[in-house]
Length: 288
Image 1 (tube, rainbow, N blue to C red):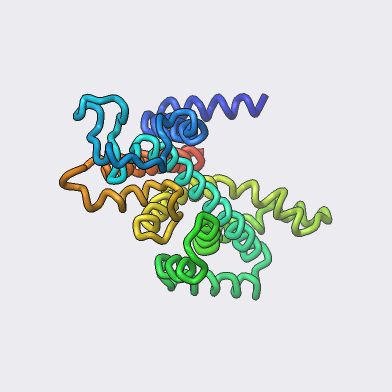
Image 2: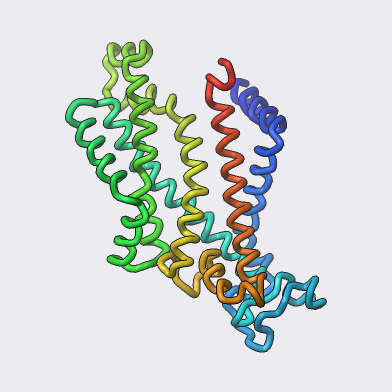
């Protein structure tokens, strides 16, 4: 019963926020497109057709064979965008999930145990934050080679510091609360107290940080792919499509415009959802 009321409350709050509702609908559309890309794509995303290279979109050319036109190798832009959605969501979801796993573990450990454990982890976080993330990404990718697996691992291995700092701060504020003290006094193991009583109360900021970080990771993946250091061809990525279209901006604007628009829309949907979650889950804003 409580669960039904909770979901009804969330749905009611969502419907009262047009931007959040737009973000959720847009994100669901992207997820659906990623799942159904092989069915929806009218052509192979990597199939060249030099006789049709740089064909304008259908409303300009008058031909419906290539709705969004073709690139410099005659590959269908629409099909490439559909398959590129998969990579953007996959890298965003997997990279942030790995970062969250590392950050939550170390942040909770630092905040709950305290002492030298907290000092060591905090100094390690400060050291990583002192180095620009872009340098770390580039160094690792140069050392181990650019690939989808390497990209996800480096994003998770570098991007966990935000989660760790947020979780540490929240755990520090909770570890001496009455319900936590009562759990410890009843003889429960520290790990069980942390997992059962402390971390569930930290989920709200984790959800907000995670949602916003997915947007950041999607932009990062596109930027690295644009530079040739992200996911490598023949795998289709929006960043690689931007790189292919940069030399044709004046003559074939659709090569870079459509993938750039997709990056913008996907990130906007995540930002709208993240802002809404922050307002929904922050008791100071809700007045609870």
